[in-house]
Image: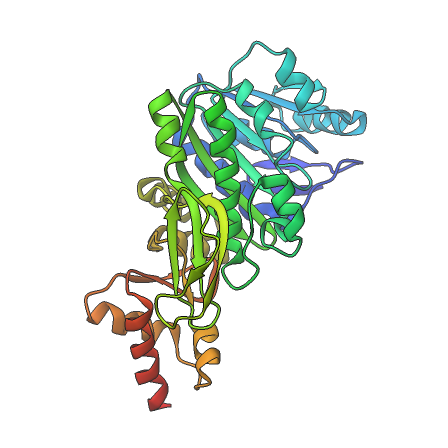
Length: 363
């Protein structure tokens, strides 16, 4: 018997990843702050049914549909629903078949597949409406983070970044993919939350209906140029630059994208989730993670301090000391959950370089 939140789950023959508890806690918290008793919710990749069951037990949602095309999984979902005394609608069907045959529209569409999201987004938006939330998990991080560059180009239509920036770039590529599909249905997007943990990406996106919203979202996507020599980076909306010179050191810069260049968090949603975690979650590591996300400065990419000091061949410098000095100079600066030694700031690379050099000399 596996216990999580208010749910008790018999795993039986269905797969349950206990290491993904934080992602599920985050999703339950999101449902608690966003859903109401009239919300129509679908868990498109049921497994043991743990997410849909937890939504019924721990959020205001009362109408939850759980899908799985595997007969053993459906049997497990039914048994676990009975065990927890909840009554979701349970359907043995593939998500693709369901979305092409159902006339229902859902307020919350939760998809947590094994692997990539690319086969699911088009079908997800078929059962969405203006104001619907897509709650999406991707585990194909090796593709999105550039370990399999050609696969990312083929599946997501984007050139990935394969260095310390890869996880943030991967999430931005994933959001860009959603933007492109959503626009075909005349939807724009608003990003509520984007999280990287272990080998998971989890994004929470609200669909906003209308051609103006769709065009606005597309206009917030583009390309990033970055220098691997001095760590300079710049973004550009529109056409991919074929060759770019680093504006800081003059080296040849690389280009990546197309990707989302807009915000990764809604500050109010992040703070509301932090309050939920502080009240309902006992694991200090999860609360600490949520604190970092809620405080993170939502800039385009971060700087890895060890990568900078290594490139300069100087002693390591404390990221917290850098943050303190940047704030003293009037800049915005915070840690980032993408990298334990990374910082997000509105300071440019030249100002950051001077500060790193100065602190490095003291060592």
